Length: 615
Image (cartoon, rainbow, N blue to C red; front, side, top):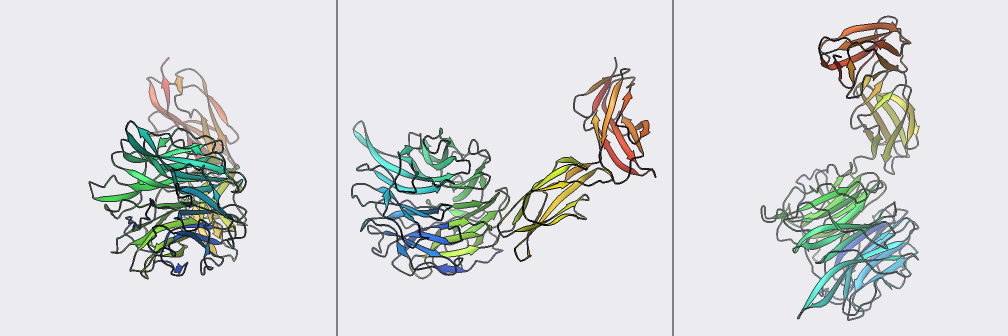
């Protein structure tokens, strides 16, 4: 999702971003959204509650130069993007300069569009219009910001929370006198509407820096927090990506924090997305390689603690982005638990094309990117994307394949991980007879699930339950023979027609125990020779009855073992007096279960070494 900076003149920039060099996937079908009318720019996309697709753009049909009389237009599709209805006019600013439109929807299906225009002649202001009939008509616009003569307030973004409250952020560009000089500054402001966009409350300053802060992205999380990120030049004019959050519904914002760790070259023009777990993903235009490699990059950072901290940023693109393209804005979307997509433009094939990459593991890794536009001529740029509940990415961009910029759409359905196992997901330890919660995340196309477990690293699988209708599932681990350290869970998803649409298993093995040495087992235990201690263990359900328990001791870290006791199967502890002639620091005890035929049916030893020392 994105906007482009326009100041007095609409800057028609072709945006080039470097992407990965693997085009394994072919471009999806491209759909023309609007008829040729003199040039369309800066499309923005949103989805309705019944899979409607809504797109807005800046339209130059009244002014092909795009310098003074531009409008905001809207089109919708109700058939998955195969066709779009005739576009309708949203802006109501007369012959003024309307620009930087953004679109979003609420849970009730209402559509909201924001933009800025100069209808008052002496200022630029941010306006909002609403549709309550799925885009058939739009209300008269409402000014979002406080009017200030001579101040430019522009480039809005908007977010809507689960209660339907609307949050709009924007740039405020204003002058002030410092000594004998007139200076100009940028700040990021925000306003909130609690009445469905009929009015907006106090304008709140989000940023706290002393230099320029501009180009904001705003999101509202499931927790009620409001997040804003922006470009910030407080670092001696070098731009960085900064962030602040509000925990009181936008009344106040936290102290600004820098997201990017590298600060020697500029980073900016961020875009933000949240997933269902409120993991925050931020992408931006990064110039750390501008002088070393004569190129630019797309970087991303994420926060798992609602913005209190961010992980170090990672590079998304692999192909070099030409250095001359200063203004490019990568766009990002997220859905569910860790499904993330990023789009940009680059010139790897000689023309300007739109590329997409995605991650289905929360941004830990990304797939090689692929081209979205099918045209191999002209210029394709300024993409915006949104992901639906099935993990499909809906894409729009401006396209010059016919000689003038038009708005195009494509639906990318290349989601890989429809099902993601969450728990158990590796390194847990359970006992037979315990009830374990199996949890998974699934996209909307998976409506029923078969669950399996393996105790031999996935060589064989045994059924847990079939045709289950959703996460989670409480599984009682059956009786087994032997501790199983290579155990996995597998979840298979099916659609409404019974077709398999996804499968996933635990990322790493977990352990299932039938016997567990409980003492001595913790780290730091020390015994004194000649002083009685008690060895303790637990036995959990086994397939075969436990006839005997043998207890062994090692003093050399497990190289050799000495039998201490052979006990009846119902024993769970035994008194023992350590005896050593010198201090031993690599000691463990081991419990071995055997059935009536003498077969081993369970083995476990102390988790940590203990010490046996002299008095």
